[in-house]
Image 1 (cartoon, rainbow, N blue to C red):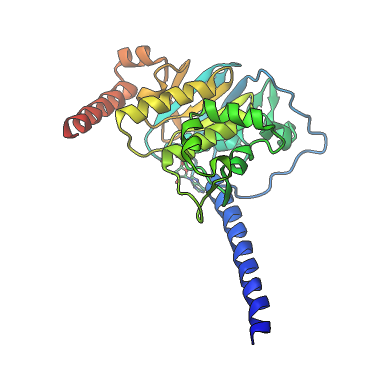
Image 2: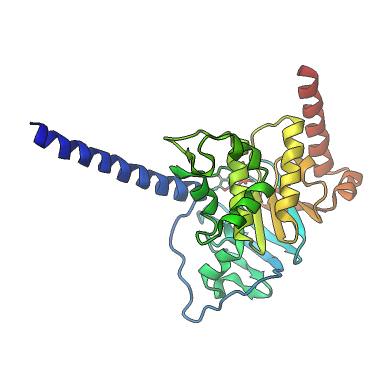
Amino acid sequence: MLQLYIPLNFLGVIYREIRQALTDIERMFGLLNQPREIADKPDAGSLAADNATVRFEKVSFAYDPARQILFDVDFEIPAGKTVAVVGHSGSGKSTLGRLLFRFYDVTGGRITVNGTDIRDLQQDSLRRAIGIVPQDTVLFNDSLRYNIQYGRPDAADGLIDTAAAAAQLTDFIGRLPDGYEARVGERGLKLSGGEKQRVAIARALLKDPAILIFDEATSALDSRTEKAIQAQIDLAARGRTALIIAHRLSTIAHADEILVLDQGHIVERGRHHALLAANGAYAQMWRLQQQEANEAETRN
Ligand code: ATP
């Protein structure tokens, strides 16, 4: 009986490992919202982008033909600059990031990087040039090192240390008995939302992309954490062409341009102070968030 039990038990372990790996992959694609394969054109070019200027030119988009999500969205992120997008939940902000990464193709207009339509680029080269810090970072059931290195599997230890330090993970890693080798994820260490996001920032910094998409988490934060996130966005965006999808207006007050999206339309655009002075939708959202922040501070 024991002779049968041992191999069966072993098979059980392997089965669970495979199930877990499949769950990781499913979760990753589920969260990244990847629906279908987009094929390269036969003559697709390679993007060699150290300095990348991104343009959305009259972009329209629908996940489902019956419901249009974006309407004539037009903006430019000059190389090295930061554009932030704000707007109510469901207004289409994250969709802009998904289109730039080419999870989906636009249904009208075009997106260009350095003047080339991204549909004419090899997806690999486009995706190599883009780092994403998603709202909800997927961690693999593996070591912290693996999870950071995922952005660049061939990275040397020194580079991993630098990226971890820049993402303010050094102290955290130093406190773990196994350091970088600590296992994280479902069967290991549970990281807080902020820690997960710092791992995602370290991943993105290690990849050293010309273009950064930062999709800020929606969860409410105290003002100290909010300031820390603002500092991290600034750091990750420095020297890159950055699209920041923001939920807290205070984190993007320094953006070179802020777009206010309402049901897929850009209804306002400009810098923070100009938008406040215009006293429109942005100013209203700002006042509301300030009021909520004050109320939260009073409660604490
Ligand atoms: P939030 O602030 O809540 O993150 P958002 O402004 O980023 O919202 P998007 O995620 O871009 O909004 O979604 C815009 C609209 O598209 C929403 O109404 C959403 O329900 C819809 N949508 C998003 N993903 C899909 C999908 N895969 N299929 C169909 N509709 C989708």
